Image (tube, rainbow, N blue to C red; front, top):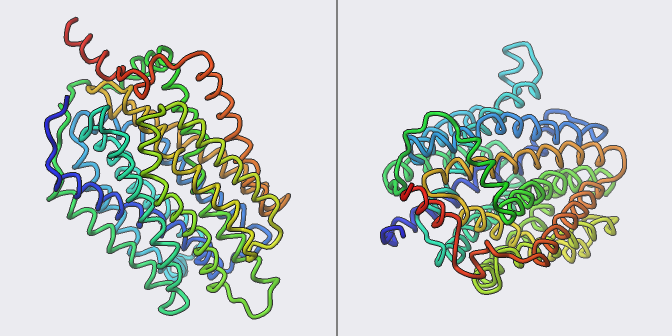
Amino acid sequence: MSPEIHPSLRNSLYLIVALSMIFMTLVLATQPLFLKGLGLERDNAGFVNANIQVITELVDLLFVGYLGHLSDRFGRIPIMYYGFVLSAVTAAVTPFCLEIGLALGISGVAVFYVARILMSIGSTAVWPQLGTLTGDYTTPNNRPMLLAKVGFMTAFGATLVYAILMQLPKYIGLTLVMMLSVATAVAGAWLSRHFLEERAPLTQQEQFPFGEVMGLLRQERNLRLSFLAAFSSRNDMVIIGLFLMTWFIYFADLLPNVTHAQAAGQAGMVIGFIGFIILVSLPFWGWLIQNLGRVESLTLGMVLSGSGFTAMGLIMNPFSWWTFLPALFVGLGQAGCLLAPQTLALDLAPTHMRGSVMGAFNTVGCIGIIFFIQIGGFLFDLLSPTAPFIFTGLANFVIMAYGLWVMRTGSRDDPGKNGSTCNEFCFDTEQKS
C-alpha cells in the first residue's frame, strides 16, 4: 500500500499531463498544415505525413522501453524534465525549417523530419513516466478513478488544441500557434522539477529485466490482453489527428472559397468533439472499470471504437455534419480503450519493475502506431481517405474478440473482479524469497 498522497501532488500531475498532451497534440495537428505550406502536394500527402510519424515512432521504439527501466533506477522526474527541455528547444526552431534548409542547402521537409524526431524523443521521455507516476501515486482500489482524472486531463489537452488552438492560424498565423508548443514544454519542465516527487523505490538492477517481463506476460493472460489493446488502440487518436486533418485540408481543394486554414479549423472541430466525448465519458469509464471489471470494460471500449472507425467509411464529404456520428462512437470507445488497458497493466506490474513493465507496454503501443500509421498512409493514397479508419476499426474488432475469449474462459487475475493483483502478489512473494 502506497503512503497517502497529498492532493496538491496529484493536482500537479494532472496539470503536467495536460501540458504534455497540448504539446504532443499541437505538434501533430499543425504538421499537415505546415507541410502544405512547404509545398507538399496531395498525391503523396498521406505517405509523407504518415512516414514522418512512423519514423518518429521507430525512434521512440528504441528509447521508450529503456527509459522506463531508467526511471526505475534514477526516478521518473529527471527523465521527464530533460525530455521537456529537449522538446522546447526543438519546437522553438521548427517553424523556421524552410529558412534553415535554405541555409544548409537541403529541403525544408528534410529539416522538419529531423526536428520532429528530436521532439518525439523529448516527448517519449515525458508521457510514459506520467503514466508510471500515476501508478506510483495510486493503489488498485483507487487507481481506476484517478486514472480517469489523468485521462480527463489528457483528453482536455487534446480537445483544447483541436477545438481552440487550431482555430487560431487563420487569425494569428501558423508560426505563432506553433510557438505555443514551446511555452507548454517550458512550463512542463518547470512544474516537473518543482512540484512532483518520487514515490517508488529505486532499483539497483542495471539491465532491463526482459526475462521477468516476458515471464509475467506468459503468466498473466489479462496482461497480454492489455498489451494487445495497447498495440491496437494506442494509435487511434494519432490516426484521427493525422489522417482526419489531412483529409479535410486536401478535400478543401475541391470546394470553392474554403482555405486550408479554414479546413484545418473544421477538422479541429470534429477532433475536438471526439476529445469532448472522451472528456465527459471518462468518469463513467472509471466507475465502470471499478465495478464491472477491467477486461469487460476494455472489451466494450473496443466494440464502440471499432464501430465508430468502420462507420467512417460511410462518409463521403468530411465537411458533412454526418461526420460527427461515427466521431461520437470513436470518442466513447476511445475513452475506455485509453483507460482500461493502462489500469490493467499498472495493476499487474510488480512495484519494483513498474517502469520496465510500462516501458514494455508503451513499446508495444509504439509498434502498433508504426504498423497502423504506415499501412494507413498507403491506404490513404491508394484507396481512399477513409481507408485508414476502416482498417483501424477492424483491428479493434479483432482485439474485442480476444477480450470476449478471456471473459468466457474466466478473469481470475482481473483486480476489478476479486481485488487481487499480481502487483501485490509478486511483490510479497519477492520479499519472502
